[in-house]
Image 1 (cartoon, rainbow, N blue to C red):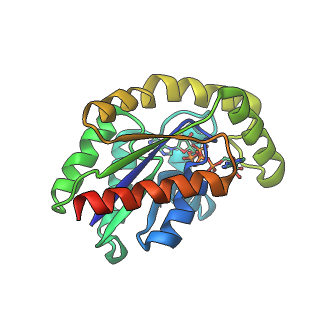
Image 2 (cartoon, rainbow, N blue to C red):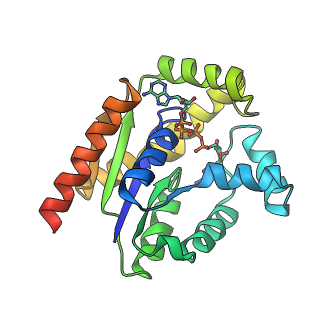
Length: 194
Ligand code: B4P
């Protein structure tokens, strides 16, 4: 069983890389952003609630997010682990994740921090706005997402670094080059931990 956490600012490429890892490693990507967007599209109660936060670039409240992740873990495809993309996004969520994984006899094994400079992040997200029209990819909302990231999510870097789990990856290269590094690190981990 292996649990990988993808950390990084909005637009760093967490989702892009998590999807490729899912295909290569055979364990599912759990993207809280994608789960919210799925609910939004299907106009579920959860989707309507999430929308009011996502539209502003704020975090959706923990009780809602945690319940959604807990439910996702009960699905059979998670038996061998998961790639967590966008969760945890705060120290409180990281503690919940530890408890959730303990209940599965698992733990956080690797944390990838995908590092990208702010100007490049904004450039990518504005480009995605043109291509995909995501409601939270307008310039004002993007800037707020960056602030929310610095305040809530960036403290997780030290949190996981202290536990010896953090691996920094230079995310300002091609998708393929970034992915090659991730795969090398996963293979290194597998050799070390059997
Ligand atoms: P997410 O869906 O997680 O959005 P993100 O952080 O912007 O995306 P990501 O980093 O995955 O970037 P991507 O690969 O797409 O969250 C959206 C919202 O949901 C949050 O603001 C919040 O409201 C809510 N939410 C989610 N999780 C939550 C939680 N746990 N708690 C509370 N609320 C939560 O890449 C971005 C773009 O860059 C793409 O267009 C891609 O093609 C491009 N790109 C990727 N890699 C590249 C590369 N190497 N070179 C050039 N371009 C690249």
